[in-house]
Length: 265
Image 1 (cartoon, rainbow, N blue to C red):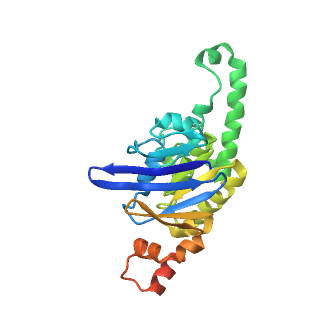
Image 2: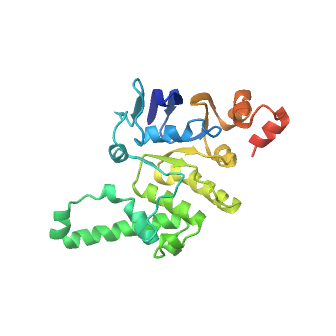
Image 3: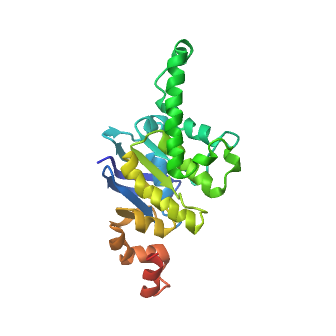
């Protein structure tokens, strides 16, 4: 398994945000994580990526490494990358330089080497820039490479965040609500990109998303959280018809036909 958790726990005061979550995600899978607001999805991401420390007794394994409570930069160096709900871009930097900033952990030379081997470094930088331009082309932003990030639309900025995360060449990419605020056209475009990521870059993906169409149409497996616990897991079709999921996600006041119609987006 590329990622595995055992009895993953996190409490804030007396509130159990994550309560003994066991998850296994194989390499090459696109995994969706859904659940109502406050179900623990973002806390789960923060524990995996090292933003939060988990509680005693928890275990997180990534790519055969015990990463439980390891610093975020060390987890990132192992090949785990993520995006955030709030976009974190360098607004006054160009689009291409934002993407190249995502490659910084892969730079194979020191400052001294950069000074002493200038020609070799310049050649390497050109190669990297060409790779980043190819990446921008993949997400549809090549024509905006020299534009400042602040000049992009909201949808374009989300694509830029995605490109920058891919630039670090991760093994696992975690996307936190990548479709938030996107138009229907851009949601469809995002779904196409997600489907291509696994094949083009050999990525494993975990997606938190409230737009169920994204999860149901792109993910191999869907895991459902409610009140910090995993209440269901299976294919999109299996999860969609799970009564516990329907009740937790949409509430008990809707009749069965209305619930299933809402989930079948």
